[in-house]
Length: 255
Image (cartoon, rainbow, N blue to C red; front, side, top):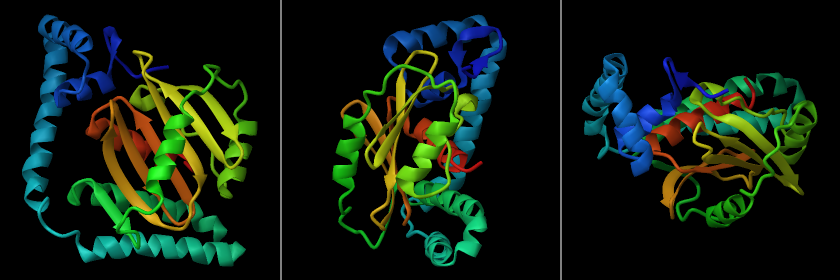
């Protein structure tokens, strides 16, 4: 089920955020605009989102030109070190989900404060370009929703050599559309209320740590990679919506 606005079954929360960011296609924007003009409650809802966005810009825009705080870099790197220790000591594996959530929180802050890109020991971007090409090539996921996710959860865990599961993104207005596992990689596909495709490409990391977001043709692409898990997300959306989905997906792998 998509996260639709009450009394507006054709409009999802993600549509309001994309409208506010100026990222909706013209025809879709006209639908949302008409609904806003006809419903004062919906217009008030959007005004609240706009006020939140303005507040965030007011609070954080002065930080854009500053270097990433060292304590945040240390936080992200300590998460990667914890991963290595967990791999070396199986008894510590039970804390994997905890430190991964810590790393996810650090990455969100780094994406916000650092202006969209954060690299560790990989200043040139390394093989990320190849990962993106493979992720985009794998977006042809069959439009069939699995009735039982257990085999797919097991397959994803095998691919990345970690205990993970298919993330639930229904709260963001995205329904599961299919799962494809090929060799040492997997693609999980979702669709929003307008049938727009959002994919998560998963494979075991090559060891580098990378957080990055950019546009490739008409797609927004986000690379979220730690020392064990490599995740490339792609879809037609604004940077703000991608950041929200990326955070939900990353944490949802173990939640």
